[in-house]
Each structure stands twice: as structure tokens, then as C-alpha cells.
Length: 255
Image (tube, rainbow, N blue to C red; front, side):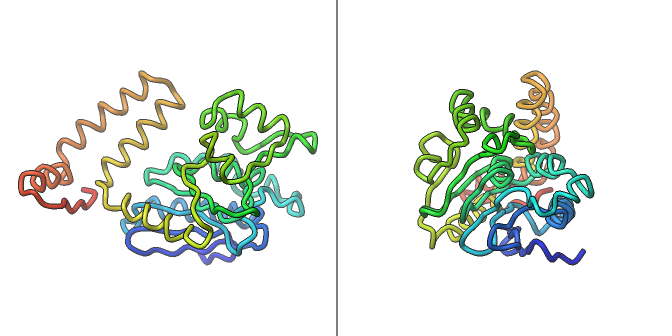
């Protein structure tokens, strides 16, 4: 599939998805369709072990739903379904927030496993939908309290608060605040480090944690036990043990 609303590049086992509708990178039907396709392709790709999501330009990471595309809201992949797929990716996903992340853009950041944000006055995060008499529609009401706690999430949503980078860091909404000029370098370095971790074990942790959070503790433990049995027979486990005994860095292949 040829992409016109996103850009996908891969280097050193890290794939970067750039929303390419500057200056706002608002989500239209094209982005939903192309994100859905890219997620499938990257999930299956042996050349991808970690993913970065960012926005084109310097103004916006993602401004959420494109209101000018409202006529297409019920066409193509549903926004909730696409975001759920990102959250459940078996490979770690990092949001590199390079501009405002509002509404659906904040919800997109929330589905990523890690969030890095540029230290800039124009970089703000929030779920301002209540100002318009509506509510966050792509999972923000459910995910935000899991990240920052119930009362902080309620205050942020009910008062449509917009947070600067340091404020977002203080409540745990983001993991790192970095100089704007270094955002992609920092995100890439983190992703490359993740890509060197054993892919099967990483997948096991992501799947087990997601299932536990979504379906409960016991169901999560069941998935963990299944993965433990699989990993014990894997080539990566053998490589990890061998490298430890030989006092060298392991080279994992995902097998």
C-alpha cells in the first residue's frame, strides 16, 4: 500500500511512523486506513522490533480527529479499533510528542507504551472535548486514569486542562521531557536499545501485561505461564544463557 497520509521508515530494527498532514496532523479517514495497514505490516515484519510514532512539522504531534472529515467518520477502520491495535502491539511503541497532542492526539499518545515529549512552549497535551459538550471518544476516559490516577484524570478531562511538558511529567502522563532538538535522537536511542532485547520475551511481557490489565490478574497469570513454557524452549533463551556463561553480549534473533 502506498502511503500519502503517513510516512514509514525503518532503520536498525526501529520503524518510525510519521503522521504526515502538517501543521496539525489531524486524523482523517486516510490516516486511519494507513495506520491500520502499517500496524499489520510492522507487526509481521522481522525488520521491526520497536516503533516510534511522531508528527510531521514542528507544530503538532496530532490534533485529534479532523472535523473537516466528519462525513467519513463511520467509514474505514474505527479509531478505537486502530488505537486498540497499537496498544496491543507485540512490539514496544514510543510516542515522540513534538507538538500539541490534543483530543485524539493525546489518546494516540496514551496507547503508546512510552511517551517522550519535546520541551517546548508549543508542546501541550490535553483532552479538551468537554469544552465542546462532548467527551473523548478514542479511549481517553478509560486509559488516562490508568496512567495518572482517577482524580487527576477527572480534573484533566472535566476542566479540559492543557498541560505543558513539565506538568505532564509531574503527573506521570509522559516518561521523559527532552530538548526539542533532541527528541527524535532520544526516542531513537531508546528504541534501538529496546530492539536489542529478546523479541519473544518482550512480546511475552507486553501481551501478559495487556491481558492482565484488560481481563484481570488471573487471566494475565495464565498468559504468563503459557509464555514461560514457550520461552524455555526458544533459541533466544539458549543464546541468553550461553552469552551469560561466556561473559559476552547476547545476540537475540526472536526465535
